Image (cartoon, rainbow, N blue to C red; front, side, top):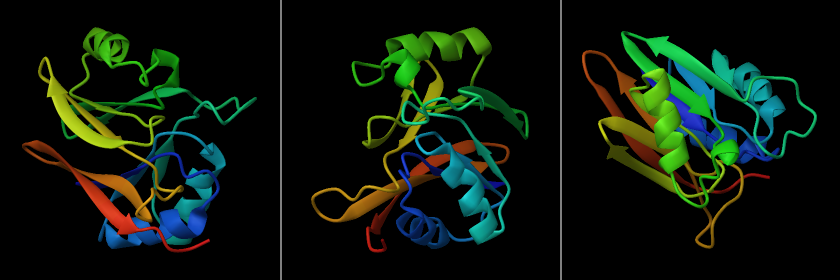
Length: 161
């Protein structure tokens, strides 16, 4: 199974849509918060199933802030990260991932794309699919799920509105 991952789209559907199309064939899209409503719009634009959580910019939203997703025997923990203060470090989020038995944590909030493993738990932050950096780039991620579990960062020229 091939899963696309975006976060922090901030209403920039053209940029996020371009990035997701560049990911190639996907079976599922994960949206790790900030502009929860963008997830449904992207799912419709790209004809993809989507799972999403709210972020700190989704004020008043009643949708979930966290979600555990079981895929091919792997447990994915999807959250935005703001409730774990990930801009200050990942330790509280690591403890939560341990507590729920996550194999992979997907998060956003920092607008920095990164992937790493801590204590046997894989972390994937796709960065921001909506706000280009100084070089005009937006980022996302790919999760390949099968007998193994791999992640990668996708970089795109941030064109679009």
